[in-house]
Image (cartoon, rainbow, N blue to C red; front, side):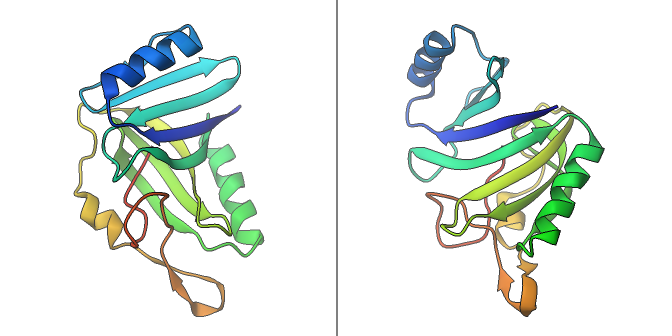
Length: 160
């Protein structure tokens, strides 16, 4: 099964947790000092909020897979469609260890495809700058990074 993923940046985490808990009639599945996540079943969505962005609003969208085969199928589909792809492989972010890659739509909206492997006690085990400097070779040899809404004009600096 796949699950739709939405990650928002918020100014006031406590206020936003209260709002979304009432909206979803559920408490977050994970809550930290800078992050909260709901794993909703109806509809199936991984909805995350954090205070780690440059401004409030949508950070990125994505698809979370239940297994490595589903993730590989999403990656193959993106590659077959001649999309620029940033393959992070095994990485840590948002209090989780995962395997992931990114694509961007024509407007520059970042889409994360990922398979979560387990929880970790910190938001990110490596420096955000390492991801910010990452880039991929696009089709026809153009170097591009996967942009994130609301981020500075650099490649992807965020994660789920």
